[in-house]
Structures are given as structure tokens and as C-alpha cells.
Image (cartoon, rainbow, N blue to C red; front, side, top):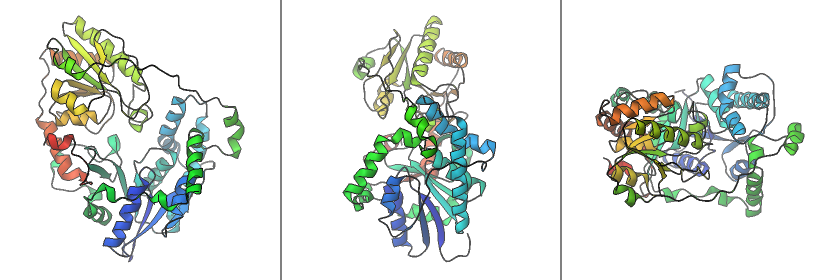
Length: 446
């Protein structure tokens, strides 16, 4: 750490503005004068909120620029935004996103050069183009980062990491977690001081938007909602004609299909259960970390095909799908060996049915590991670790072969390594943040 009297921190709290603003207020109260935060915004909505504070604030507006990032860096920072653009059916050229990323990279680097910053704090790391650019510039400049994310053991826990979240986090082995040596980012003063603030009651976090005048906040809110997709692709005077002529696809209204009751499934003694939780198709987990499945309809088709193959091989299978509570996507399930299960807690499904879990990279996999159940992943995730899961597959043949071996008793699974991982994550990696939220699965499995 440098010898300056104050520690300069560049903060972009997009993702959980209230939490990060609150934490820096608490840091100032506990360590007066130690930290000098500068808040960074890129939307008018956040800019309006920051203006009501005494903290230093910098706003960066969208624009375009040629040549700043290298080609490989551009591919990395633009991957999510381009993937989201294609998901929504727009025809925006990749070069346009590259030029916006170059502008953001250039402006962010100017901000970093304007003051001797010691840390960059942000939320999630790659959830939109601006955040991805900030994360990448800080990484290239070798500037220590502290990245927040919702906890793996929700709702009481949060994640603080110095490298990234999900598949990009700092966990590479169980041995690393079991070691007495802390992660590099855990040695830094900022991490240690923030950790001292936890746990606290979540209800203590104020809604900072209430400090903004209601008319101004309403205008910013309406603007962000009515032009959310256009703003995502950074509509400016330069591309106004393109966006005005672009047809954005409308979602087709779908009827809700029947769901099977958990109690009915508990009476089935003739089948092996495979639980397959759906995920949000526009989440970074799918767009960035799912190499061969991009839609939940694809996931369903693959698993129904696997069920047919296993059944033909003498394995009685019943595949259970479950909607993600944050997704409006409805996937029709019409297969004799597949069902859509009712909206009950994942913990109840795991506890009562004891299924094998096949997931792309959902946190439901974490719950299953914690419950001592076998897990197969189809995407990139930090818990793709030897012995922790049954296996990871990248095509339907490999998946069918692995599941067939397991159900025929030719592939064994031990829950020991998985429980080691869960215990070590609670002890060393996850941060117990909120003392007033209800208990979740992490305490039931301990």
C-alpha cells in the first residue's frame, strides 16, 4: 500500500448502489479520513443520485472512438453486450460495440491517471459494457480490484473477490481453500476494513434514491425503463437513424403449462430423478459461461433426448425441470419422461427427492453439492473441480455416457470433497453479511 495519508478508491456501484454507498459511509464512520472514494457513473439515473452526495463523482457519457483496446481485449469486454444484442435479435455490427468500448476504455484510463488510485470497487465485473471496460482497464493497469456479487449462500452471504465472480473468481482448487494462506486480495486493507463492517442488519441500508427529488427521479426512472434496451446499445446521435429503423422483437404471450406437484413425485418409486433447473438466458452465466447451450429450450431438448437414450439402455429416468423465478421465458415441456415441477424451494426438491442434478452452472448446483448429491455441469463454473462434482460434459454423447455409468453403478460419487468445498467457502471465501435475513440452505446443510 502506498504511503499516502488517504487510500483512494474508484467505485462503480452499478448493480447494488445502495449497498456500496452505505459501506463507504460506514467506512468513513469507523475509519475517519482513511478512505477517499470517487464514484463513477455512466447512466443519467445513477448520476442523478450521486449529485445528492458530498462524495467526489465522475460521469462518463457514451460515445465512440477508434483504437484503444487490443483486439483480444475488445473481444473479451464486448462479449456479453454482443451476446445480449444477438439474443434480442438486433443487427448492431460488432464494430460499433468495439468503438464504444474503446471510448469507455480511453475515458476510464484518463480517470485512473487523474489521481493515484489504490483500488477499484465494482459490482459483478462483466454485467454490461461499461463495467466490463472498467474491470479490464483496472486489470491491465494491475490496479487491485474488489468485486462484489450476491452470495453463493443466499440470502445472508455476499461474495467479495479480487479477480471476478462465478467462473472468473479466485477459486481454483479445494486445496487453495483449505490452505491457511489468504487470497491476495484478502491481505489488503480495504478488504479487511470492509469485512469488519459485517454482519449487520440489511434493513439498515437506506434507499439513497429518496434523497433525489421525486420529479427528477421519476424522469430518470421512466427514461431508463422506456429506453432500457436502446440505452443498452448506447443510442446516440451517430446511430439514431439505425435505432429508429430497427425492429425490436416483441415477446409472444404464452399460456402457462401444468406443473407437477412435489408430493406426487415423492410417491414415485419406479424412476431415477434428474433435476434440471432453468436459468436466466440473458445472464452472464449463460452468455459468457455456457459454451454449447444458449437457450433453455435447447437445454430441455438435450435432456429429453438423454432421457430417451437412458430409457432405451434400461435406465428408468424422469427428468424434472424448474422455472427460474427471475425469468419470464416459458419452455414447453411435452415429453413422456419429463415434467415441469411446481414452484417450490430448490432445497425441498433436493431434500425430498434426492435427485441427480444436471445444471449448466446454476447456484442450484451449489445447493446440491451442499446436500451431498451428485452434480453434472454443462457449462463453465468454479465448482467444476475433481471429486466435487460427478463430472462436466460438453456434448450429449458424453452426458449420456456419464449418466448411464452412474445409474448402472459403474461410476461412483462421494460427497466428502463437496462438503469440504462448502465448509471451506464459508470459512474462507464467502462473507456473512446480513444478520436479519431468514436462514437459507447453507445452515441446514452444515
